[in-house]
Image (cartoon, rainbow, N blue to C red):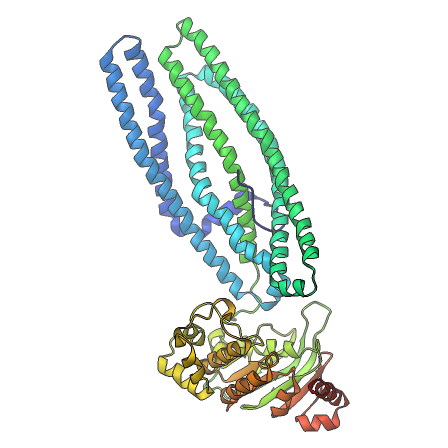
Length: 591
């Protein structure tokens, strides 16, 4: 029995509305769905004809001793089995095809939505939970699409068809069976309530398990450095234990329900056999009719049991849909406005902050009344202590966030009025860690400009002075960088990130101190590449090291979310006590 494995707190309200919304997403699959339903109906009808053939063979052949009737009934039954096999195979393939196509569309829609969400969403969300959305929740839907949907459709149609057949064969015995089914429905309702509560807890704790697991793996170096393996394992053990308890609560509900269903099935069978035998003896029912009724009865309860099993998969699928729709419903805060336009060409590259206020959390200001203008081609360094707000300035310049008040503009055009494609062409970010994607070195270099030719790539590498390094690699541009660029050192990853930005040819570069994590020798190489990249371009450098401030045309000092001083490095070292203090701390760190 499958238990739900998706993460997060869960309560599916109005499942009918949820299913309706899911159906609207798959509207393009309407005709394949109709085809799958039609084929499944045909398969069910073909199967239901079988007991009627058996009844005719028993009453008209066995009881009369007519072998020809028995042989004819046998051949017809075999033919029905062959047709049933073919149609059922087509039905299962068609239902699976529709389910997998639907999941492909849904998976793409969810991932596409996630990529459009703002940085604030990702800072608020646990990465383990987000990963579980695209893994555990999709897996739950896939289980239902590959197994549950076929069982639900075929068995649901079978239950309805058999119920009709029981009434047509003998309505009096059918009433006795339906009385037992009423008791089964009551028991099933109780089971569903218990199972739903248990599955709520399972879904809640699997997210915690994934989050704790990911945190432990990501921070394994810190764990080992402080010899906290036992403590970390204990923390994971506590979460794992709660997940185990939640699963066992679901197992307890299942452990009593299915034996009760089996018992009720036997009760219905014994009652039908007793009533039917008495009626055969008194001549009001033929033996063939009794045999057909008992065959239908067996086919009646088994699909009901199957549907009870499917209920677990359905609950899991509904819960997964609820969570995935929750992601799809996340508001895209940083989006292209209606009527947005491209930046006028050529882009000069001036960047202006005018009266900018910003906070990540309400009533907790990070930036206050920022007025800043960066001239075309100017290299501006933003300096300040940790938490002063300097990195937030870079995020606003890239429009990862919009200001709460004021405007951020390029060439005097508010970034909120600029098309996304034009903004991306004009601005580029080089983060502190030089992130690389799995694939080849060439794939990473042309990431922002997929149409770049080999000649374009070669020109950029030569201009940045890193052609020799690329040529020294075993496979050159076709070298696999591995996950997160693990094949390269931090400095080499940063060189690739700089070359990637150079190839994109932006007008404004925002750097989150591209050399802060590098050793001195590698820093020299990166600084050489930076000089080539930043030539004739506007740049905003978030300076964690004051060496970057020394090389800048102008420096702004940020403290407590406000700009408290600006000028050249030399000017601020003389005029600003706060800046002079930073210089002294930095110089002591070098000695």
